[in-house]
Length: 157
Length: 162
Image (cartoon, rainbow over all chains, first blue to last red; front, side, top):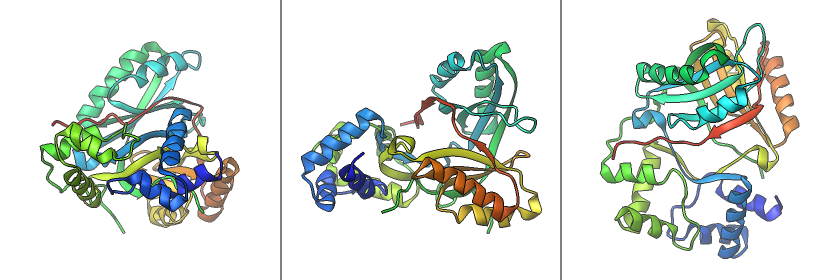
């Protein structure tokens, strides 16, 4: 990422301007042409620096009031194959392998499951349990009880 | 300082167009001169109506953000999930210290012995370790660092009934 890309990140990390020609507005701020803004955003999408350009909904406002972080103790030898399969489930929004912290924390696989209530999250977790089968030797569902802080990623000037 | 999880959200009534906008705009926003006009055309509405609706959804906190989602690690930064086990009586003090750190992007209370979970987003990978050490020093509790080893899938797939 060069200085111009960085300037584009700085100009858009709070969001894209809500004006008819948002890329022109960013271009004016950065001091390059609108075409260059679009070309660079396209390149950042291609390289994965930008995951997507879109809106982030507030789960809670959309009725998804139960957000369960399901955590699983999965056989290390099978986690990659199973992780890819669980990531395909349409109710799983994020899915990662993370380190265990024994003895307090035996879980190495995390899948975020969203539901309208806890019963729905538990039914969905049961589907994950079926896919994991005997590769999982235990799981828990951690529900968020309070949002303490939520800001996006920020880079400084 | 107790704040509900739904702070600022969950009260706005959404009509069919709002719902279509939310479903349509979770990704794939076009890279062209007049992208809102393009999306408005797909949704069967006008550009000015779409812009007004997005503003209303952001103001009502139905949407928390609209724009490019940057991938912290590919920007050269660090991103990690971390957890702490905090006694109830000390929870507010520790939450205050953790939330005050600019490196902490999200922080949630969860019903588990590990009861505080936060995301550390830093501009450099070494910033992660510094942030963790500072939290441990200032709070007096250990941080369980859980950086991702592999990412299998990350995408919002929230659909709401149109």
